[in-house]
Length: 231
Length: 231
DNA sequence: GTCGCTGAGTTAATGACCGTAACTATGTAT
DNA sequence: ATACATAGTTACGGTCATTAACTCAGCGAC
Image (cartoon, rainbow over all chains, first blue to last red; front, side, top):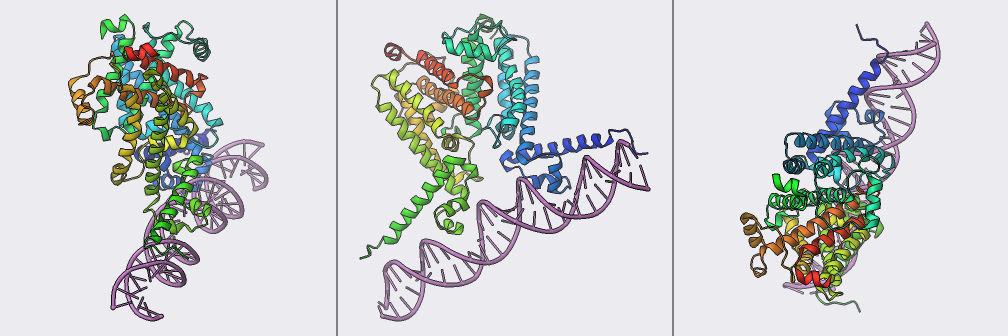
């Protein structure tokens, strides 16, 4: 009766890995990655702590894998937000709001993704995290770059060169001004969200949502006529 | 021979507190606050771990006090940077560069100050940290607001009200546009620094310093003629 | 000066954590 | 049926924060 396809072991293994990651992710969502406890994960799924080491080399390694998943999840959310709106300006707003909403709804996950780089040696980590991060950032860039000619300051030559190298190949059609605009846009959104999540604005009594809206408005104002017309 | 002024005990106590904070701060600068070990502090100064509890209620409480010191130190650095330059635009540049330079030289200290709010119950913490944080942010605001009339978008009424409440009393002379400009300026600088410290820009190969300079330039361009003239 | 208090320090113990080692049992291939 | 890899266990060593019980020095009051 038992399934004797040669990959039965592996099927169960994948399932176990998924369960570990799911319960670990649940703990991260509750208390944050730095308070994630392997003992807690094992206890929560009726498994000894030591057994987890059959599936992950260390606590940091597990956290790194969770970081990858978080980036991919965020990318999906942003893509969905982009798909819900037709006009370019509306898409920018939609993605920007989805970005902040998701961060507020999943603060610990956001910190896992964009907080300080985890783990002692991040060499093998970055190889997997960086592409995932690139994907979520790509959505932000896409909605900004899809039709705008930003009226921005000239890009200094060295920075222009680096941007061209970074976007090498697939985005050579876009001017460096647009790409830089997308980058700093992302950075500005992140700046406000980071302060809000760190509760560094609560003492001021100012609603971060209003500051955030202002930043989005400023970015749209800095973009070309296609955005201005449909804003 | 021993000094028998009635506060001898207290003198020694202050000295011990200072030594504990100094060694703890040194550890934080090395490994970050989340890896700060009370055992390590005690060991490093030839003291049992338990004795530290005569001076600090808990590890989190000690970290909170360090956070206060960090904010004050940063404020001093920024004030010194502001004092070194005469022109308004030069002051803005000087403070902005000092901000990033200090963050890069003391990444763990910066994270302690502007990272996620520490400690479980931060009620007694914020009472001491918030004013210190206000001071360092005040320097940033001062150099921006000292003479600029930013050509910015109109401030929505609710945000204007909150800003007025926040700056209540001492800054009523400044228009809300200027204050918001200072706030978002700080947020933008923090956004880039946070990403740089988190190593989230290394994968792109782009020099964060160039992006940072661009943001400073953009802010100066958005300020009034007094800055433009002397830029 | 002695009594009693406070405060600084100690050691010991509790309970949590990560990670490793030794071992058992189960599944799989030959 | 035998040999091997895999998944799991318990037991252990080490670190950590925190509390409790205890000792000793400093210091004011009598």
